[in-house]
Length: 93
Image 1 (cartoon, rainbow, N blue to C red):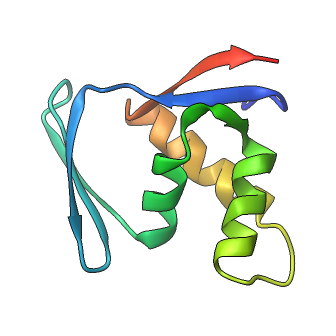
Image 2 (tube, one colour):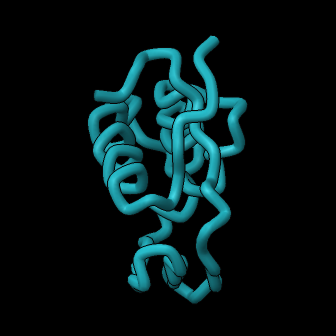
């Protein structure tokens, strides 16, 4: 489960290439290729160890001019990135 105050960092065990509609990510550790849509690419880029899940969701809300904060979809995205080894928790404030 994602902690309310957890902050996330990229693991660094992958290569990423920007494409027109997101990222292509090659996870060297798991020998897997992932396609990230634009939202997932933004979430990945925001995993710098500074922002919590809620703060990341607020950035996504502003970026796409959404009517409400997409906390559940962002938490799902973070959980997926965690399970695939692309990010890790890097601290709790």
